[in-house]
Amino acid sequence: MNLPFRIDLKDKTAVVTGGGGVLCGAFAKALAACGAKVAVLDLRKENADKVAEKINNTGGTAIGVKADVLDKDSLTAAHAKVNEELGSCDILINGAGGNHPKGTTSKEYLFKEDLPGGDGLTTFFDLDPKGIEFVFNLNFIGTLLPTQTFSKDMIDKEGAVVINISSMNAFTPLTKIPAYSGAKAAVSNFTQWLAVHMSKTGIRVNAIAPGFFLTDQNRSLLTNNDGSYTERAEKILSQTPVGRFGEKEELIGTLLWLVDSNASGFVNGTVIPVDGGFSAYSGV
Image 1 (cartoon, rainbow, N blue to C red):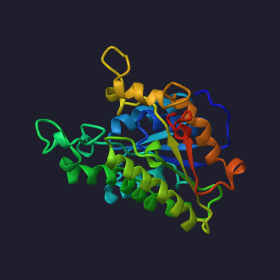
Image 2: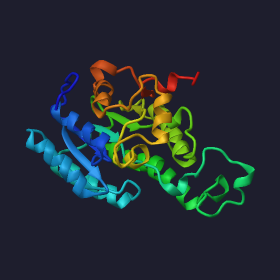
Image 3: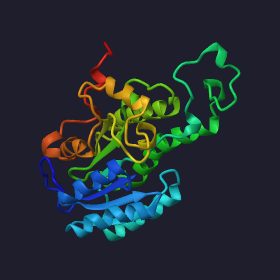
């Protein structure tokens, strides 16, 4: 793939959770293009295998691995497979995550006349605790458990790095999605905590906070059947100074910079926005 620049990851093993998706699939390909052996972890193994196949077909080295980031036994099995086929982990990208309708309100604001809810309307008071728990666990616990599983191998390794995937929601919560916003705020906080906790072991921990990118998860929310933007998409773009959605390739430079200890060896515990100016814009 075309890279903004290359770093030397020869003899390194990278593990990418959520690697079958659009953004983390691009991460996996970029790391492989720099010489890393890449384990593409995903709950849907067929998606992981597709990314791994593309890497292998272009001269890289990758395997697809089925893994549930909320299941320690599944992660333990994935860890054993990665170690056996590629070697122990040097680089961990915690990219698995997502939202769920049961953690989402129907409207941006609560109005008295919306109560008591019902008739297809989900107010704050109707949010399903199990839905909130699922979203929070998928994003936060789904970052914590893979880190527990793979980072033990990384202690005292030169160039060991963990990169978590946060979100703009961690800076300012978006309307309608309290569970996802809270979970990503937890990921950012955990990134800082873990960076301090691991600082004596040689493992650096940072996070990337993407702005708005079209992915398989959000495409139906942001685009209509004819390809035009939905009302919510137009609102997002109106708050993004560059006036467009990001392209997945525009995350790669930040990824490679954070992975390369020669370039960012003193960068630790940071959350880097890649958002077209969204987090800097006050709306006026």
